[in-house]
Length: 365
Image (cartoon, rainbow, N blue to C red; front, side):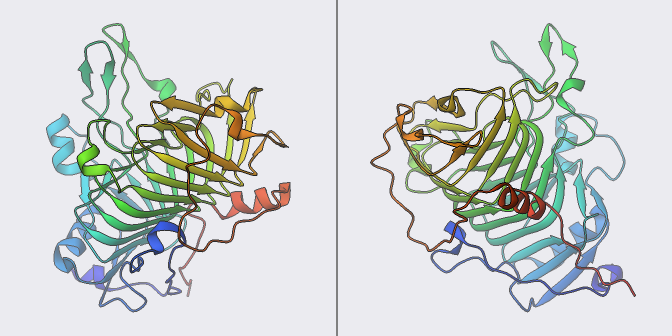
């Protein structure tokens, strides 16, 4: 397709991450001067660019809405698996050219690859057309907005994740159970490592971020799953920001704007502390309407280790280290970072305004 080689006038973009994705060689995606550049406006063009480029260093600019279904509804789980998944290759920068760059009906997958940047995109969390019933647990969906699986050195930057057009109040009841059609927004699992998630906007979702596949996956996950979250906004989220197993997780300068009596997305908790995980929380802001006990920001799932430094809960600096977790055995990460220390309302608004797919690189001529 010749069209994918014709990129509209635009401001070039290149940056490198802070946090774990900066370690052991860093994360550069397609690089400052990619060997290959593409501009895609539909799913056929995107697949053509990915197939043609392989693992060569490349930047794929996204313009407009990428609908993996091509406008034809999925028939069943097998059909959605075949057409709905989009596999991103190594040495790739996938980025939106402006605020209209969007993925719908899509499950983006970064699997068995390395050195990937996902930047300035809106990802509508996919709707499973064929959830599977699990006895005692009900209907469960399969697909995530973005999955990082056995991948290393991945930076997710300025991405907005949302249930979008299909919110959880639209679930029907089937055989007496809620017909759940969303899984996660972002999953990081199966020995993935050196990941940074920054300036992203997560909204309108239940089980938002999962780190670690299962409690029994220690042979693969132990010593891996090092992830940094900074300057992200979690707005009208129910839970799992994140839910962690095995990983070393560092969170700083994130905002949690939630509500326990939200009409659709009723807040439950923020950090799920699971098996053999270590979580360091610094200078985060938890604005949770209707919540009076700061320890209920956390939920234990067999994990022991959580340390907090100088975070704020509903305008008050609380002693988060008195919530029953071991806070003395969580180490600071090896990289340099420079968090905002004065968490004023102005600083919080600055973080909100910079989160998500807010950039316009297109030059209108």
